[in-house]
Image 1 (cartoon, rainbow over the protein chains, first blue to last red):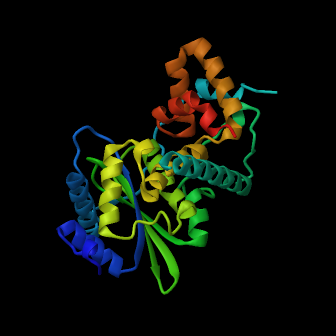
Image 2: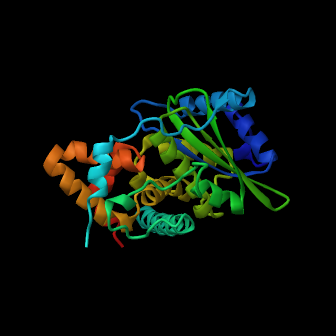
Length: 81
Length: 214
């Protein structure tokens, strides 16, 4: 571990633990909101990880509302050359 | 330098997603270059009743998708790639959102399976901190490192997958027809609803056709 990788927070410690478990890459989808800090994002990731560990998960959402039959009929009637 | 790198990765992401959308549709016997509205269908991301991007990804890499029982504050989703004794696997986590947004974020994160390389991997806590800071800043054109650029490029890949370039002529005809009857806002909404993608993405795709048209 070089100097840059010394854990300095709970988030860093979590990341190092993931690395020791074989993590080789991580990517994120973060909503851009004015004023959000990197620390807030890190805390939320830790919270999400805790939720997963405690089994507080749910099925992925599925469609539960649909276009009206009239709109569907109009879509179906459209053609292009 | 970063602009050139961004352009490279965005084109790479779009081209990759284009091929993936063709592969998934071919597997499902869905038409490429659809010509009539009956073939204007959503592209499966994780839906279980058909071949999907998730199923395709699971064929090449053990992949799990977990939805946590809480809405996002800032974090919509994240993707972790592991390698143990040379065997790759990945974990994708998404926060509790509506169907269309979940499809989009799962799609975006799945794109990383096909875009990942050693240059763009996030491999240290310093690199991860930089990635988060750059994503929070949200201005991809100013980003200097490959990890942040690839993370943003994946959004373009997701949009191409969900609304492929070959489907745009039919989407534009639908938009034109519905705009006349219902107005532009309703026309965008109908397309978004039909394809099960966020409305803002449809509007972005129509407003930025040139970025995808190659």
